[in-house]
Structure formats: structure tokens, C-alpha cells
Length: 336
Length: 139
Image 1 (cartoon, helix red, strand yellow):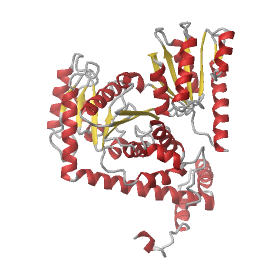
Image 2 (cartoon, rainbow over the protein chains, first blue to last red; image 1 turned 180 degrees about the vertical axis):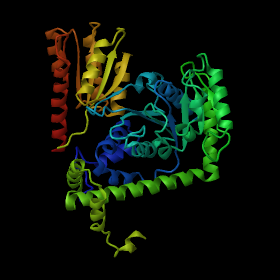
Image 3 (cartoon, helix red, strand yellow; image 1 turned 120 degrees about the vertical axis):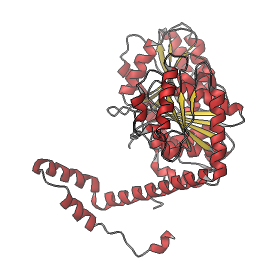
Image 4 (cartoon, rainbow over the protein chains, first blue to last red; image 1 turned 135 degrees about the vertical axis):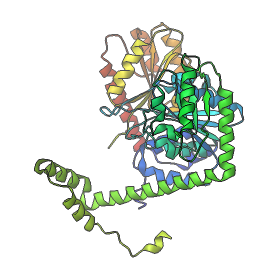
């Protein structure tokens, strides 16, 4: 396994790089993030190095439809959290083109107020293959920022619709950002993103229609539209541009953060995330073995081509492939 | 070698107040498969280089039409060197006389483009330079 997990791209992770990283050099942090983003083979070594430095930070997801002011709010929040004595990491995800692979990332335009603020480290990520509002490397990048010493990590998703829920798996607290004049009360009764919210923020509260949206949200939540099992999702109004309501939002988030830690739910979330991380890494490894052993992807493509022509069911092939792919049972002790 | 996408920070330093050209070039770079961090108007050399450090950008592209290209490019290049990213490409465009281009080139600034240049030429140039740097780092 060690062979296949060695770094193959770009300069390797030198002891000097780690020294600079641990010494707090921002450029070193940026370089480690680049590795996590671009070189899957380097991830195991990086993860080994980060361990012992993770588990304390609170990760806050900021999600919502395009154009509601997520970046401006994220910037204002970062400042508020930093003023409260936190070091703050920001991971801002913007969409990649499925056609060219390129991405236009404009979040920094809204974060001008953070320029020169050493308490904050901001990184833009293109979503690449991620389909749920985040980049595949988002959690790994947040790990790097936490190990670099950040106390709060803000994860800003791409502008999402109703069902992009990846942020739930990555964040301890999810902030759903909405703005007035975007849909009636029916929208707030639909399942999906609204159930993911730990806090709902109505941003651009200087626009008309804010009272109506607040009322319809309160109504929807009173009918149980929020996260199953919770009955009082807080709803706050802000104007990020005018810095209104930011203090209240920071206070709400900090109070939820200490509740999470005190109740043990923060640890429970970390366990769930670790479970995921382990499962995904093993799945990736098993799939890579299959690729090496039988060229699985190419075979699947060929069968799909044949089935498209013949109109047959895919299951005879699936059954054959599964039956021929037995996991060796003899070394269960290695899993202890 | 499967190259990961090139990351470019695009900015307009100084006070000149329109960024159509910068946006056109940024879009062309996205079309060419690059990940563009767009900083927009009224950036200082400090804010541009700080962003490039955090983003670990492969290249910085500056658009300068105000005539102040000499101080902007010189200052950004100097800051890149002191911040440890002097190996990254600094390029850009504007209306820049050949003599000034030569002076900047001697300081280590990359090729500069003008109004007649096709944006796809800029993308090709950035690709060539960035891939060459990455290849050198691998060896």
C-alpha cells in the first residue's frame, strides 16, 4: 500500500515544509493545502502528520442559493469570530465548469475587509468533481487549516438549490442563508436544505419583504419543517454589507459551539466523520485494486455499450462480477 | 503526466475604475480550464500578493490601463520575491510600451499583452510557463 500512496506530483512533502507549517508560515499552509487538493497519493502522509492537532476546532458551513450574500456574510462572520479571540479559516467553494474544468472564483471580491488580517486564512476551492455543493477535498483542506491553528473554520458552499447536502457531513453547524423576495412560504415547506440548517439567516434585511420571509419561515418551522428532532431552529436577520445583525449571529454560533462541545455531540460528529473518512479511503483502495487487477472501468464501459444496443438488464454482468470478487476473509485480525 | 488545473490570481491594481478587459481575460482562462481567483478592482500590491500566497497560485495576472504599469508590476514582483513566491509567473496586460516591457522583463516579469492579443494566446503562454515550472520542480 505504501508504494501506491507515495506522492507522485510536484515536490514532495519535505521536512522543511512541515517545519515551516508548524512554525506558522502561511505559505507553507497554502502549499500543504495544494497537495491535499491535487495529489490523492499524498493525503495519507499528510493526514498522519496532522493527527494529534485535530479535534478542537468548530466547523461552520455557510450555504444557500446563489447571490444571497454568502461571501459577504462569511467575511463579516470571520471578522466577528476573530474579534472574539478566534483564529479563523475560510474555505470558499465555487463551481467548476463540467465542460472545461475551469472555474471563476469571485469570493475574495466580497472579502476585501479581511485583507491584511493575520487572524484569518482564506482559501478558494473549485468544486471540481464535487456534486453536493463542495469540492471533494473540502474536509481535508479544513483539516489542514485546523492543524495550522484555526479555531473556527467557515466552509462556504457554492450557491445551492434544495438538495445539495454535502455540507452537513463536513460541518458541525450549518448556517442557511436566504434573502427576501425569493419564493413564497411553499419553498420553506419543502424538504432538503432547510432541514440541514442549525441557524437560518435572512440576509439583505434592508430589502423589502424581509418581514414576510421571516414570518413564513417561522410558520414553516412551527409545522416542523426544520431538522427532524429539533423544534427551535433560530432565525436571524442580517445585513452583511451594513454589518447589521452580525454580532447576534456570532453570539448564536458561539453558544451553539459550546453546547456542541459540552453535550458531547461535537465528539459524536467527529466520530461519524472519521467513520466516513475510513470507509471512503478503503472503498477507494479496493476500487483501485480492482482497476489494477481487471481494468474494471474499461470493462464496465464496454458492457454498458453492449447493453445500450441490446437493451438487456445490467444484472447478469453485475452478478458475475460480484461473485468473482470475493474479499479474502482470512485476515480479520488486521481489522481489530 | 496528468496535470492538475492551473490556478491564476487576476487583479486590477490601483485606482483605474473599469475591469472589462480583466474579466474578458479571466473568462478566457476559465475556458482554457484554469481556476481563476478574481480579485477585481482597486487592489494594492500587498493584497494581490497576500491572496496569491494563500491560494498558492501558479500565476498572477495584472491588468493595468492607467499608465502606472511600471510601479505596479515592479512592486508586485518585489513583493512576490520577498514573500517566497518569486518562482511563480507574473504576467498581465495593458498598453505598455516595448521599452517598459523590456525593463520589466529584466526584473523577471513575464510576457505582457496588449489590446491586439487574442486572449487564448495568453492562456497558451501561461500553460507553457506553468507546466515548465512544475516539470522542473518534479525533477
